[in-house]
View 1: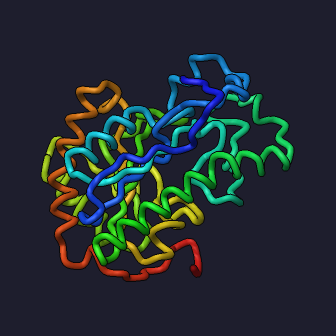
View 2 (view 1 turned 90 degrees about the horizontal axis):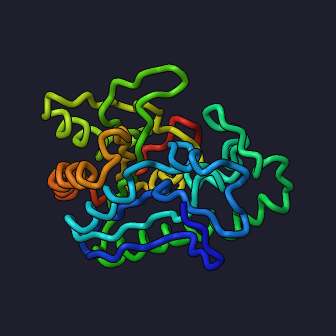
Length: 265
């Protein structure tokens, strides 16, 4: 974990905007501004999935480089505030996560909640929106948005059998071919809306893709498969030709609103 008095809430990886792809990594890092200390947690907690998505920063940066496309990464730990939640989501700032009490988040005054929204959450989403808009302008069509995440192999006593999962709501333009192409490797167990459901109102995909009718998907890679750099790079190399092939499909760069299973848009 890195702590700094000068803290940028996001990082933009530059790439060719005319390619029409934007990569996102909501939980790429586990860093905290110096003023928050460690949120009352021992250092070991920042090695766990509760603090960040292990391996995702490397996968995202390598995938962006291989495809030659831009990426936006959140620089703050999800324990500070979770950018992949709506502002009204009760898990936006967690006080308990997978058995760990986050004492630095409890009690949390409304003023402090708003401060974290203004300093970290909203600037990240502003950056995401700006990059998506610039890609749409550069390629003169609707962009393709891929959000990269990772998941812990074990959760609440359950051994998760999937190597990778694809999350989506109603728009399957990216999800269906992504599942099918990854599953061509018969050694992989590919989850369809596993280990989570992709219909989450107010999350990053809802906010930037679903309401705008942009083709999208969220990919979850099991953390033990990308925990070291070599394996993370290998997964980026596995995904790059698949993402490139999907990007060339004629329906990907059209605005099409499928709605959401969470309710009216």
